[in-house]
Image (tube, rainbow, N blue to C red; front, side, top):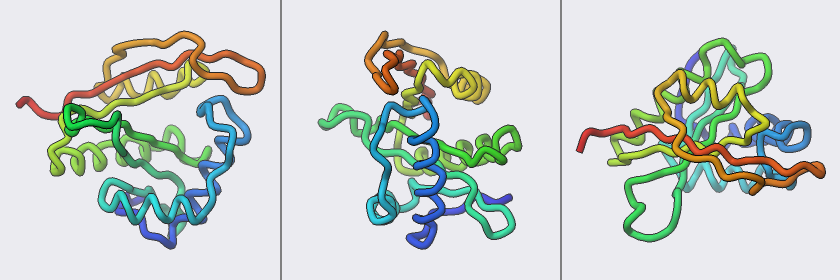
Amino acid sequence: MITRPAQISDAPAIAEITNAIIRDTLVTFTTKERSVDAIAADIKNRGPAYLVAEKDGQVLGFATYGPFRSGPGYAQCREHTIQLAPQMRGQGAGRALMSALENTARSENVHVLVAGISSANPGAIAFHAAIGYAQVGQMPEVGFKWGKRLDLVLMQKILSTE
């Protein structure tokens, strides 16, 4: 498996991964599937901050980050997303993607990466804790999907010492 910057041609594979998660899980509160064109635009706009995990020529996961909140005071803070195809979970792809993404963030003077995680995804909470993220908050019942109210767990990792 390799990690590399995403290319526009990866958008269909990324759409397949993320839309299955949107459709079939409570991992994201989103209910609207993403188009290939929207993902391609994200890849173009985020540049090196959009990475994929590839095995045998097939994209099986991605990680990216974007603004956490607007305003100049948040310029060194980003919120990330990481999603893997089911067969890649527990295989080291998540750790490899996050390590590469954190290195990219450091090179772009990002001080803090934030994860907003559905309380229905305890595996993601454990994963983030294992790679050095600290839980800094929990927002009860801010998510709603499939008739269920869900908490948002906030975790963060400070990337630089300055």
